[in-house]
Amino acid sequence: MNVSAPGINKPLKKTNTGRGENSRHRTADIPTQVKNQELVERRRRQIIDAAVKLFIDRGFHKTTTRQIAAEVGFSIGSLYEYVASKEDILYLVCDSIHSQVEHLVTGAMTQAAAGRNVLTEILREYFLVCHRMSDVILLIYQETRALPAQWQKRVLENELRITGLFTEVLSRLAASGDLAHLDDRDIELAAHNISVFGHMWTFRRWFFGRHYTIEEYIERQTAFILKILM
Image: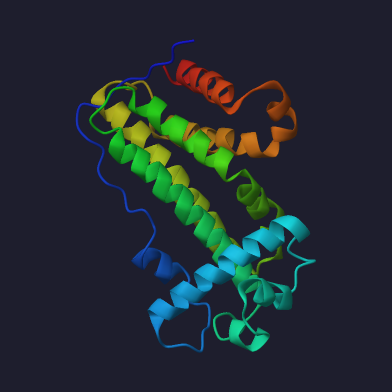
């Protein structure tokens, strides 16, 4: 099955990845007793890596901050120099996952800028990202209800920011005349559908994993999306 998509005559603009300064801004409300920001980021990265492993293996509610500290190699007192609660750690995990997904999809947008079939290339990278990160994407959906309302709101904002990347691509295609029949509401719905199709590999992998390889899933879902949009 040969899948192709319309090209874009001019390069896609480089979208802010949400990493670096923006990521620090999104986590600035999490209290820390340490003034050295670089040290805070480095230690929180260690905490995130340890927490992801434990949350996937044990679940959020059955994992204790003491276990996270032990996994990192911290004392429990040292852990609380960088976060105030286990919910803070879960939010850091969610923000990190979203930042990684956004960074990888944005990279695909940049690389596809001068080539043909830009939508196909971006869909492929996004589906592969969802495949590689399926455990942690599932973690977000399963455990974010445990977050305080302010963190839940931020997680949803992060989701919408990633969907906004697909909105940008589709809008550019519409403006170039390749998808001129799509209006703003069509584009919005299509962008959300693309986002969900990637996550569906995670939610339904108990079925899809038995019947499709990830390459088959990407090829067929891409063909389905393009058929609807074209």
